[in-house]
Length: 351
Image 1 (tube, rainbow, N blue to C red):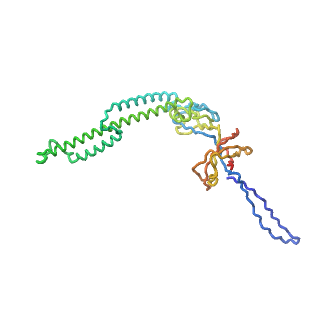
Image 2 (image 1 turned 60 degrees about the vertical axis):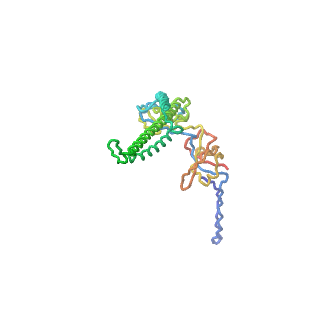
Image 3 (image 1 turned 180 degrees about the vertical axis):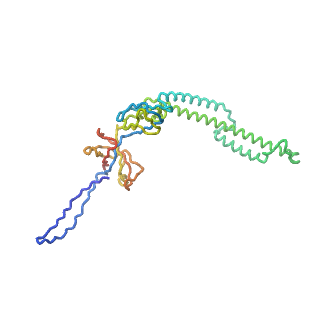
C-alpha cells in the first residue's frame, strides 16, 4: 500500500560561545505525519476484460497454423488444425452429430412405443414405477417369510403326520404359500420391467436432448460463447476462437506434436480493460462498494490519469507479506493505446 506523507525538516543548531563552551541542547520538535485522507491508494495490475487459454481436446501433429501472435481473430475463426485419427474437423463433427440426432429420435420413438404397449397391472394404477417396485418388493418379502417353514416341502416325498394327512392342512398350506410366493415374484418382475421401460424412455429423451444441443452448437452460425465448449470438444481436430480478440500467445508450430489438455493459444478481448488490486487490506476494503469512482495511474504512463469504477470485490482473501488482502476489480472507462496486459498501476479509490 502506498501512503503519502508530508515530512518536515528538523534543523538542529549548536551555538558556540566565544570561549568555546557548548550551548544548551534544544528539545526535539516532533515530526508531523500527514496522511492523504482524500482516498485509499493501492496497487494493481492491468488485464483485458476477458481472456481464455485454449487447450486441445485431442492429440496429434499440427498440420496448419492460420494466425500469428498479435493478430485479431473473430469468433469461430480457425486458428490451427491437427492431423489425428481420433479427432474430427467441424464438417465431420457436423455429419456425425446429424446422424446421432436421427438415431436419438428413433430411440425415443422405440422406447415410447414399448412403454405404451406394456400391459400395466390394474393394482399398479395410480403409482409410479418406483412405487410399484417398492410395494411389490414388500409383498415378495412377506411371501418369502410365509413360505420359509415349507421351503423343503416335496409333494411326492413328504410324509405328513396322521393328523395332517387326515385334514390336509399341511399340504394345502404349503401349496398356498408357494403359490403366493410365485405370484409375488411375477408381480415384482412386472414392476421391474415397467420401471426399466420408463427408465429407458427417460434415458433416450436425455440422449436426444444432448444430441440436439451438440447439433445446435455445431450449427451455430454466430459461434456464440455458450456453444464454444461443445464445438471445441466435438470438432477437436481444429482450434477455433471462442470469441473475438487478439492472439497474445501461440504455442503451435506446423509439424510439431501437440498434446491434448495443454494450453496452446491465449486470446484476449481488449475492447475493455480492468485493473485487479494486489494489496487492498481488510481495513480498507470495508470502505469500498461496487460502483465507487476510481483513478488509475499506470507506472509506464505516470502523466496519464485514467478513470474507472469498482466492478467487484472478492469475498475470498489471500495473504500478502502477513496482511490479509482482498482483490478488487476496477473496470476502466478510459483507454490508452499504449496500455499493455500486465502493467502495474496505482489505484486511488476516491471518497
